[in-house]
Amino acid sequence: MEKENKQCNEKDLFLEKLFQEYLPEKDNLIQMLNEIQEHYGYVPMHVQKELSEYLKIPMAEIYGVVTFYSRFSLEPQGKYKISVCLGTACFVKGSQKIMDRLTDRLKIEPGQTTKDGLFTIEQTRCVGACGLAPVFTVNGEVYGKASVQKLDQVLDELINKEKQSS
Image (cartoon, rainbow, N blue to C red; front, side):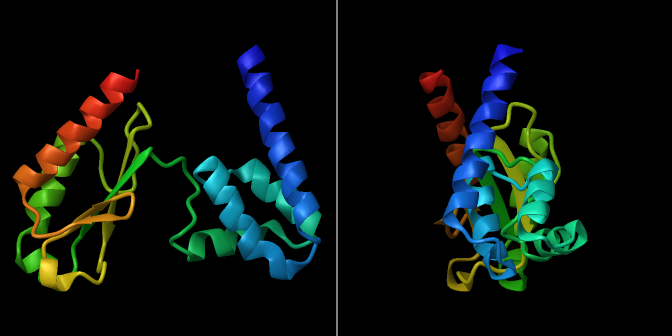
């Protein structure tokens, strides 16, 4: 219970600071959402409500912005966000096998996060690295000319890194 109260107080302090940094103007919505996404790892509903009250704009408008831009998420994201490109060049060179291995190994589907909060899987249509197809990314770092074996190697490294730090 004490830990939960501490987290709530930290969240309240973050929002107080954010509201001090920005005037209550609609033009500040995207910048504020960016900071919220960065801080929480997603845009929680209670924060959308507070933002709505502060900026004096309807919740529906904030929700519309959050769901329109892929940068924002309504659900907590994993520490490691793994995206597999399924665009034409990558798909033709086998990216579906990489996605299948990833979902099989982590036991989640694209758009989901593992229960331990470590991994989120996403599928993308193009990361602009067609010459390196197929590709996957981990927190924005591109792994080109990828294979199922390369994916397994990267996952093993991340899992071992987490085991060592705990």
